[in-house]
Length: 472
Image (cartoon, rainbow, N blue to C red; front, top):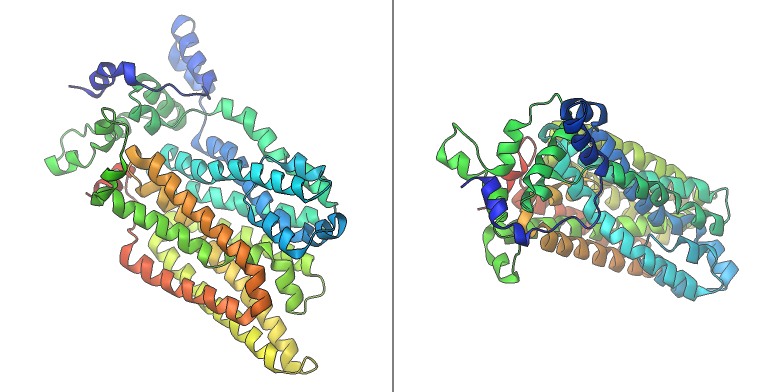
C-alpha cells in the first residue's frame, strides 16, 4: 500500500492546520491549473528556505529582546516603582513575550509580574517551535547553519535591548519590544507549513507542494519526497528500513508515556534534555541578566556600555557558529565551546577570589578586575560558539517526528525550568560569593564536555530520517 493510500484510509483522523499559513501558494497552484498552468504560478510565487527562516527568526529576536530587557532597565525600574531587589529578581526570572504593553504602562509591581508571565507563554512556544520548523524545512547540507540562525536572532535581540537601553527610558523600551512580533504575525501567512508535519498528518498533496515551494519550482524533489515517505528504491533493505519513520507515523500519530521506555525514544530525549539543561546550568542567563551588576563588581564604570559590548561580541561569535556548524560538525563545536567556557569561568572565579583577599588600593586588585571582565567576555564568546545554538539544533534533529510534540515540550520545559533556577539564584549567589558562583558554573561546563563526548551523536551530513533510525 502506498503512502498516499495510507493517508486516504485514515482521512477521517487527519488533523488540519489551525492556521492556514502560506495560503498564497495553494491559491497560486489552483490558479495555475485553470489559467496559465501550475508551473508558471509556482515559479512566480516560489519562496526560498532562507526567506522562511528570516521570517520565523523574528520570533527569536523577540525572545532575545525580552531576555536582554532586564540588564539595562533593572535599576531604573526599581527606582521608579520603589521595588525591592527580591521583587525585581522575581520579575526578571519569569520568561517573557506578549506583555510589553503591561510593562510599559506599569504602575506597580503587579503589572510587571503580569507582563512577564504573559511574555513567558510566547517565548516558551517560540523557543521550541522555531528550531523545529527550521530543521524540518532546511535542506540537509544547510540544516545546521540555518538552525543556528535561531540563536543568532536571540543574540541580536539581546544586543538591541542593551543598545536601546542606553538611550531610551524603560517604558519606551517595552513598547519597542512589540515590534518583532508585530512584523512576524503577517509574515507567517507567506511561508509554507513544514513538509514533514504535513507528511505525518497524511496530507500528501500539501506536503509535496510545500516541499516544491521551499526548494524552488525547478528543483527535483523526488529523492527527498521518497526519503520522507520512506520509499527508497534500489537500496538495501537495511537502508530502506531506515527511511520508514515518517511513513509509519501516518498510521499512528499519538504517543504514550509508556512508549518512552523504548531506546529509540528515551535516548534522544535524554540527550535533548541533557544538552538544554546543561546549557542553562552553565550560568549564561545569570551572566547576561546581571552583566551590569557583574561589571560594576569588577570595577567597570560604564557597566551598561560594557554590557552592550558583550552583546555585540555574542552576535559576532554566534554568526561564526552559523558559518562553522555544517563544516566542523556539532560535536566538535560543543566540545570546544564547553572547554573554552570551563577555562573562562576558571579565570573569572580565580579573579574574584583574589579580589576578596587583596587590598582595593593595590595594582593586583585592578588587574583582577580587568581579568574578571576578560573572563566573562570569553565565557560569552565560547558559549556562543557552540552551547548557545547547537543544543537547540540537535534537539530539533534527533527527536522522532511522532514524539516531537511531547518530547520537545519536555525538553523545552526543562530548559526554561533551569533558566528560572539560574536566574533566581544568580544574584543571591553573587551576593554570597562571586568567586564561588563562577566555580559552580565552571564545574557544570566541565561536566558538559564529558556528557557530549559520551552521549551526543554527530548529526552533520545525515537526513533527519537517518538520524532518528540510528537510535533504534
